[in-house]
Length: 234
Ligand code: ATP
Image 1 (tube, rainbow, N blue to C red):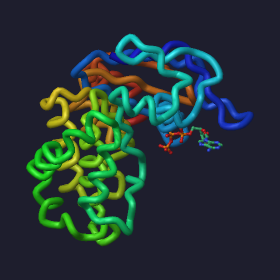
Image 2: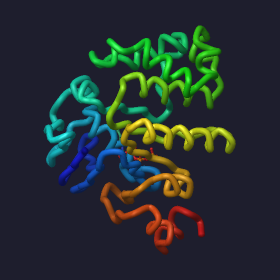
Image 3: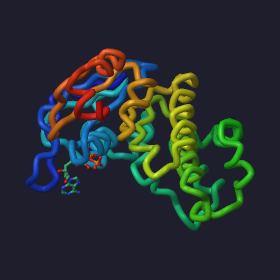
């Protein structure tokens, strides 16, 4: 579904990604694991077109997307649920969700998708008229994920969804991520909670200092000594 080949990307003069290559097959959950500053968010921004790579290629469903605008990339079916949620705070829950339906095809089906999102997140239905800024942290994360679902994506990239949430809500977030795959949505997930992430992901890539240093099935990475020591605190 997504093929990234030899991407190099910079923030100004600082190189943040070095020769990064990665593949995602349809209906997989892929985790991107790495310490703070490893380049995970930079990679998502590069895929969604917010940052242009200096070299390398990105193909999505056979089409080259590096160089396209973020809007064009979203139209092709890639949703980016950013770190920090980035909601529209003085818009209502419903308005935030409707903003997610910006791709043309999604806009036509927005009432139907809204019903589906409300079925997945009943709390959002109860609070449909409430301003987004008045929601709890957990509800805000649900709204960010619901907004991503409103674009009817084929690939959903989620950056640190459990950040700042109470442990009980963290489990809820992981359940929702799993349910996305059950709906046929492929997921690229960044998470600090590496243990949980590797338990739900099919495969993972480990990014250190802007380079992919290992990759493999999650079940195997969970047994890997370096992963255990560096990311699982074992
Ligand atoms: P975190 O988990 O802390 O979000 P990350 O793995 O997502 O980390 P990035 O945010 O992609 O890492 O950062 C990768 C590197 O690029 C870091 O060294 C960071 O300081 C640098 N960087 C990120 N954004 C910018 C920017 N806008 N301008 C300059 N440097 C940046």
